[in-house]
Image 1: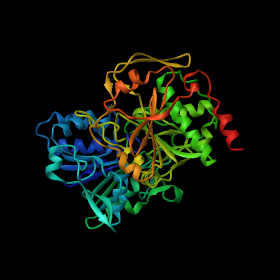
Image 2 (image 1 turned 60 degrees about the vertical axis):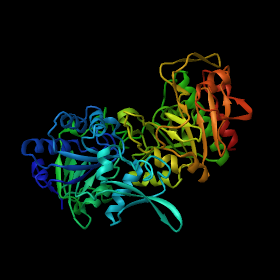
Image 3 (image 1 turned 90 degrees about the vertical axis):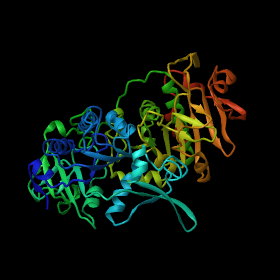
Length: 541
């Protein structure tokens, strides 16, 4: 049973060369105090050293504890604290990215959902995760296998290998079993039962604890909490990690137990207070981001009308994350059940380093269970951002030379969703593109081409998507493309846009052209509501 101890008593039990699983979706359930004290103990005693971290996606935010630790070890040429890391989103830690890019530690990356399932599979004695996610992408063992640097390619501590089962192709993701787990909750009772009532999510904390405690080498679990309750006072259904799976409980100071990066505590995020059903929102300014978000929403409204019911969706970071606010502005938020990778259903998802938290969710489930909704196609649709698209419909959302944000949840969501709306600006770089009088005015276009002959890294494979029967479109402020077996087809063009000058001349390849190119709906480019609420009600009568 978990014992409530001073932090050093718990850290003393961690041996050198440990594999440490650490919870944390950005700062949601991130045990920052445990990480801080682990590193301080190393600096004072030289131990534990040569640790390997398994984090999902990353337990930090800009200037957070983990990022500060990475800065220190980056500037210490003799550091032997960290030997490597398996991380699904290193984007919030510039110094972690530097350590990986300069080959100072082993760097591996997997999708968020796959890493979540890894802890569950290891806990039940399996070698790793068997999945189709990643086939034909940079995660595939026949491409980069998720290796982020040469040191990882040499050590191969984490692997992604193609395998065959009954004549069908899968990938097997394997990594070392953790012997230590750092997890976080809100409350522990006197024997170590852990609850999460003030957290914005509970992610993988149970599975991480189970993975660390499982055979053949049963390890230790250390839980960070903010308060202690009497044994018997916690409701059994509120306990997320039972006491027999916890060895030590540490009470953290308030500054190392924030609900998210910029929020110490908001009861609406943890679902303790549900905000009004129809929150008042200021009208969002009409610009190209709003045009793109509106076009995504129009596509989703089409799905609602086709299915005759509200739909379950995932909205990725970037422009897609703004769709929920547009839906609220239009009064149709009740027809669009949004989900966030960390576990929330509904509410208004926060962005930036607070991503993972939602204001007023109606349910919060584990991260592994949430990703089952994505991988299994339980959701009806997803909208995800893109950085590059090629002639085959392959998508690279974030990876470029010298840039290492990681795949996040993108590979699983894009693989499993039956309908995908990739969305983003048509070009990148410094631009002056305006929405005026129902038209798109390109005063100065971006100099960076995003529709390229070949994406730098394939993170979504268009051929695999078509084979799975996915419906895929690509939405920009000036054009909409559809993915077909012949490649990308230009289907829609914004009002006043010249196809040759503003679209084809700004692509590295020539797409197929629909026999009848439609004009993007005028209402996308006009101020005021698009009257979607009336449209849906009429269709669903």
